[in-house]
Length: 123
Image (cartoon, rainbow, N blue to C red; front, top):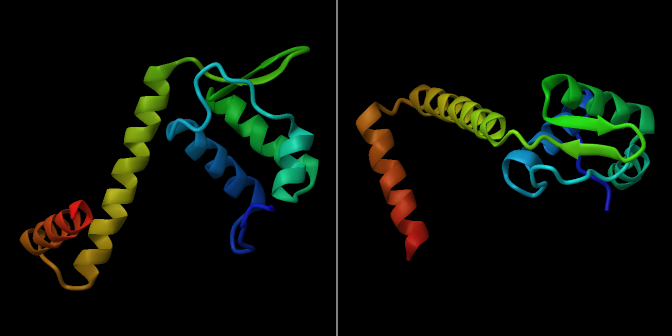
C-alpha cells in the first residue's frame, strides 16, 4: 500500500520525517538494516531518486549509516535517538499549546482539558 504523502510539502521531506519517526518510535531498531532504496521507493510509490535524497539527509544527520556492500543501517547511538525524540516531542507540545492559546485557553484550562482527556483514555 503506497504511503500517504501530500503535495503541499516536498515528498523527500515527508519521507525523511516518516523514516525518522519510525526510528524514534522503535519501529526500526538501532543497528537494524533498512530496506533498500528501491524497496522503500516501491512501497511508498515514489521515484527511487526521491527516496535516495531522503536517505542522504538521514545519513547527513547521523541517524543512518552505510556499509559499502551491506546497505544502510539505523544508528546505534541511542542517546542521539532519545534526544531527537525529546526535541520532536517539545516541538509538538509547543505547537499544541500555541493552538490552544489561539482558541482562548489559559494554562490551567489546558491542563484541565489534558487531564480529562487522559482520564477518558484510561477507562
